[in-house]
Amino acid sequence: MTSRFTSYIALVGVIVYTFMANGQNRQLAPLLHEVSHPLQNILDTIGTDFHPTVQPYLERDVNKADWFRKTFETDYFTDKFIFQLKLNKKSEKTPIKLSALPIGQISGGFEGGSSRTFLQTGIGVNLSAMVGSKLDVNINILSSNSSFPLYVENYIFNNKIVPGQGWANPSDLGYFYNNSTGYVSYSPGKYFNVTVGYGKNFWGEGYRSMMLSDAAYNYGYLRLTTNIWKIQYTNLFTSFRDIYNRSDAPGQFNNKYGSFHYLSLNLTKRWNIGLFEGIIWQGSDSLINRGFDIQYLNPIIFLRPVEYSIGSADNALLGMTMSYRIIKGIKAYGQFILDEFLLREIRNNNGWWGNKFATQLGLKYYNAFNIERLTLLTEWNLSRPYMYSHDNPVQAYGHWNEPLAHPSGANFNEYIIAGNYYINHFVFQLRYNYLDQGIDRVFNNVDGETEVLNYGSNIFRSNDTRVNDFNNTIGQGINRQMHTTFLKASWLVSTKANLWLEASFTWRYENVDSSENNLFFPTIGIRTGLYNQYWDF
Image (cartoon, rainbow, N blue to C red; front, top):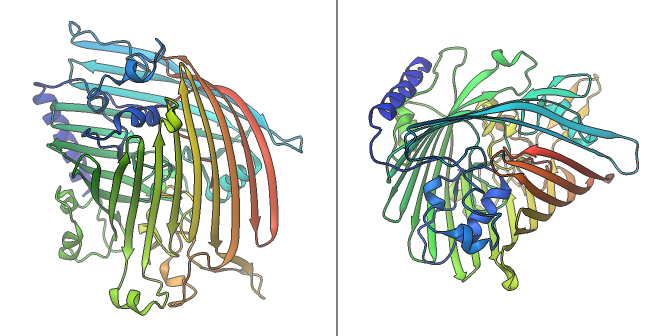
């Protein structure tokens, strides 16, 4: 099956090369808050056909409006800001354009109240090519060696992975890891785009996503995007890794795969509705090497009948999104994701463990209080116990020991208030998170063996180890409360190199079963803006 999947990717590549006909440039925008937030601020308005959910955005999406000069009243935010971050402006007279740029990071900070310091370093190169006006190739080769705040290092020790950035190899400084990415993006016309890549995707309109977020590590993917009328339809086929409870070398980890669909419809000038589906399955077990199941290449939503037809019990999620532009500048949005449920158990209101769902409700205020480029956000996220998990841990909704949706897993309520402001080359971000979660209890029994009471927060633990069939409630287990306040100021030093000078301040308070941990840490540094970094888990 794996070879057939490889053949399929190769076939797509042949099609991409063969049908290089009419089309426009289709460079992907960086999946970076400093980029996506201003794009949404101008494009996400009443009456537009912009579909804000699926990221990274295509260049044609932002070219629908002459937003650069209208939004940013200085020469800093011209058409060089977004799509010349890595490339010089492409000439129609040049059929092939190649470029190479250095990329990297050096930033450091300290934990207040202690002598502990930390340092992040990275060095690499960006290689890019444009063939004609239709085919873009972009590769980032980046190796890093870093140390982190203590709670992040504890996370790395327990999960064997740097949050969102790869397998953690111990080094003299802290950990060495590779965070390389790349893609090939092609559009044969204005209605269709195909992207083959190794990186991340984000499906949502808020700070978090309960469908698919960019908090986990990079993965291989094939993304097909179709735009017709007021509809955007996205197919995403992925290759994941399972490393839970494994201490092997990365090459020996279990392969797992995913097939995702998202249908977005701008129903009216104000209403948008979307349908989501995701399937996760393991590549092999003790009986069969299944690989990438070709039947899941079915591009039509929904796949659950396919799952039944092949006699499989894979991890399937269904969902719906909805947003409404209330008045100019104010938008409500939400997600509802369903893992499993039985209607009779919902009616019985008995807390059955299998009624697993997650939801999100949020409100955005663009150009708040008539202050141009100021965006305010408030958001509520909820996840039932055992959400995203499976009776077979390999088929959990995760990758490289990290959840594919919310980085805290399941069994929680979360409240977020955020503000973002952009002027000239400067970006200011302020965010407050409050997380109330029930976590599992880990203890040693009388024989000195480690035991776990599975209350449903760790998505990589089997459903079969649940503590109760009934009377399950959100927040059950050991109570964990976390407050995080984050302030960041960024300055875009170089548009062509996508180089940012950044200073941030984080205050984090965590209370786990009356055991408190209170810390703050400032950081300062300079880096290439390649990815979002999430330390609020």
